[in-house]
Length: 337
Ligand code: X2X
Image 1 (cartoon, protein in one colour):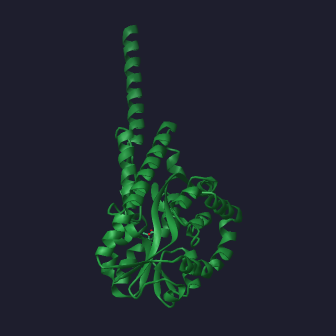
Image 2: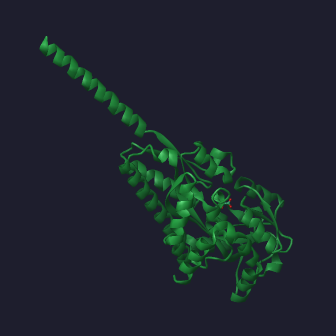
Image 3: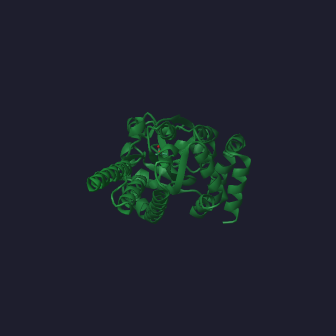
């Protein structure tokens, strides 16, 4: 009797621990959605895939990140990605500061025209105090930022003529992303900016509904923008578009500390891998674009200054929205880079 009782108890506790084990496993082996705008033909999508690969490997398959490109989880409306992460529609994202800027005013810092002249300037922001402030602002709004990635310096292309002075942009219809700062920049330059999602951009360029667009060289090249009438490409490096690996706060809390550390480290590694890869491929990408018959021009220091002068008003309007202290911290870090 005693023995039987002991045996029953033993079986019961075994059953309980098996249930707990299964529950814990079921919870941790869940699949999580990762939103991106661009797929794996682009460095952006490749960074997200790399993150998924590293997480799978380092969690021994317990944690699966499934990448959904083309902003499909928000029906292509890329500026809704951040809100969708907050509301529970999306678990994670490798997102652009541009697309998150309607919900996080501080990330407009990166869209201030001609703020960052080179890669070292980008790194001075993201790796310093300004970057920390931006991450805190994102976290305050319900998304845990884990690491930086990069979409790259955005260059301008069009179907009409080389752009080397603001006057060359006069009246030109330029597709811009759905972030209000871009309208101000292009209006200040005398252009005629039109906001539309990436999904609509290529068709609009192909039909001639718009004349030009601005995107990093990797995007121009992989999208074969020259087939969409983009015959002129002007390297004005007017802004850099960092990417951020982020997790909805609600989802972040599901993971134990060990997995949180692993997810963050994997995001960092994928981001670094992607940043190095896109920066080192840039020259080759530019050579390919030239080979396809695109006319490429660069700005002289005087021409560059004309663009800087023409867009000063954008700073006056946006510094109070971004935060004076944050902009000054970033400018100081750039000056001391
Ligand atoms: O829409 C764009 O231009 C893109 C793909 O670069 C972004 O999502 C910011």
